[in-house]
Length: 132
Image (tube, rainbow, N blue to C red):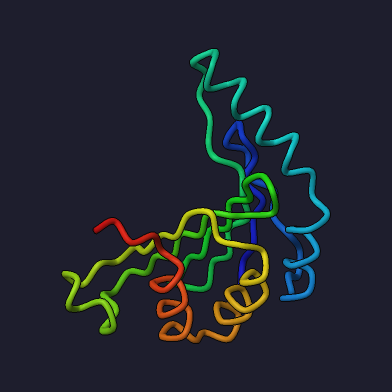
């Protein structure tokens, strides 16, 4: 598993020997508020920017956790192969859920660490907003 902190200015910082506990701690202790403020300032000034977050990469599976305010986060999960669970949705390779409450954080990251794609995808589908 590779883990990176993505800064607002697109710099990446590797997390050495990442563990589930270390990733959860980073999501709680890192100064995401400062990163979000810098991102917003870069947006206003028209500078290049990336949404700050934590990227968890395991082979072709990537979970991006992008903390927002009030403890919520945006989750984006992607993989290089279609997920059978999503075949009825056109075999999407990326799934996103916005504004996910903090109580789901541990379970989502644990599912990714354990390679439980089905559980991770099911949870994200349940948490994704209903646009209908």
